Length: 202
Ligand SMILES: C[S@@+](CC[C@H](N)C(=O)[O-])C[C@H]1O[C@@H](n2cnc3c(N)ncnc32)[C@H](O)[C@@H]1O
Image 1 (cartoon, rainbow, N blue to C red):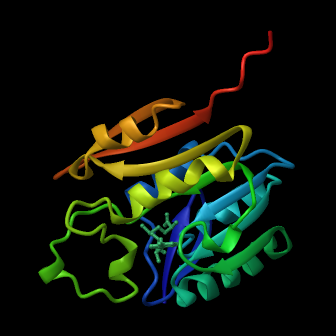
Image 2 (image 1 turned 120 degrees about the vertical axis):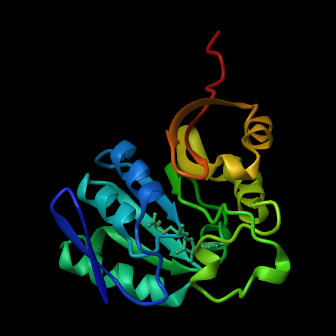
């Protein structure tokens, strides 16, 4: 079991669970969950982002395909006293929240391009492997996003310069998008803040 710290708060990370990294902390630094909001975190890993949202007063649904991640996230939520504000659900992308809408959707997806022959495909690899072009999960996420956002809702997610940011922006053309860029040694990390456009009140 590893332990990581964010702003003095400790989070346990069990084996087979993604250890929070630059992408996690970029999201955490920019997480704008507010009290009373309905927040969905996809792929919660050790639960750090869901827990920060719950500590801000949001009602959170946190999902993952990895049962070990959900166990780890739930234990961290208990340690931080917010387990009552987080509903943990196992499943692929939006499948566990079919028919539900949120004020904020947060996702640190698997976004690294990995050729099929190099993929081992265990649960830990699924945390960062985005298929041959890095987009296997991101494309499905962007396709499902609109029907899970409330009017005026927003999304916060990251991706790498290695996985075609132009395609992402094209898929988001019906939204307002803000981007923050962070240089890493072998790639650039993009934080995307996506807001639904409200209908004009005439
Ligand atoms: C990069 S890790 C992020 C973990 C955590 N949110 C963080 O920022 O530290 C991606 C997480 O998404 C999960 N995941 C991968 N594919 C998924 C899918 N199709 N649906 C839901 N979760 C998925 C992985 O198991 C992993 O926990």
